[in-house]
Image (tube, rainbow, N blue to C red; front, side, top):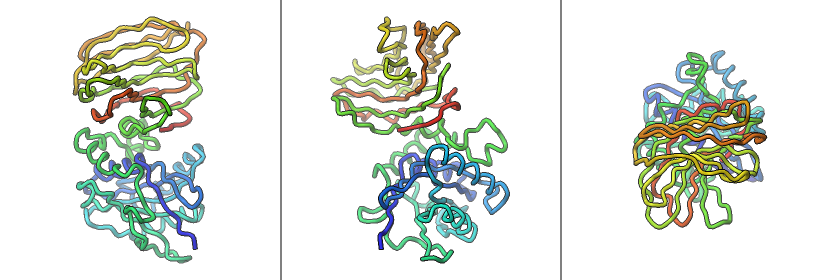
Length: 363
């Protein structure tokens, strides 16, 4: 009998941990989305559902249906369920959890469930207790194949995910920005399905390029972006001797990129706007920025295709770029490194706007 393995991506674990940390004295729950390939269920994301109506209520059913439609729109499946209890050391799945994951199992046979052991979350351990069904029955028990060890059928990717997420909770308080379906019912502007403000902006994923540079990026694709804005906290000072760039930007296909680049080549940070690519345009204005300061960036386009880029915070700068005929269809957050280590993070970007039209998100 082939044993299915499960890989939990950083983004999925972060949302589970953020949900638990935001409501530490309430039961919370949500669902896992991903796909199965060659015997491995890749859990790429989590969608937080409830912290009020955590039983099998109409709100739960509506949330499940909306999440399933969202997963299908991404070419993914609902592959599991998670919950955290009011008591930190309560790791029982319980009747409600079993019923919910059984509903998921009807459409995804290799579904799993995680119960958060909150007593371990604060010590940077994986803190997830996996549950699997007992044969063909509807009874669920903790996995007897081990959990989140080198030889178990469950692992985090990357392995240091738990410590990274704990730092984001303690140092950056990003869990406070996460919203679940209950929150959305009280404030419809809350992006509970994607939670891009709290997660995608903090967990930049490594992308090897085959060049002499290392890249960490989060990317949103859409038919067209006509504006893009957010706040970026200036990270620690990078090591001397290399070329570190940190930037949000907009890209029109492969012809170039409109960027607000935080440049650390002199072991201090300078931020300025510019367009790199075709057409070739002079670089724009900028100013020095220092660790811990917040810089707000804004990109907007007029009816003639001229982009106005504004930076504000410790100082202000504005630049314009004539890019008529170019359609910006990708928004990017990037860390771009040449001969320097990424030991100055985390990079925190928040209060992003104008991403709701994005069709896909990729790391």
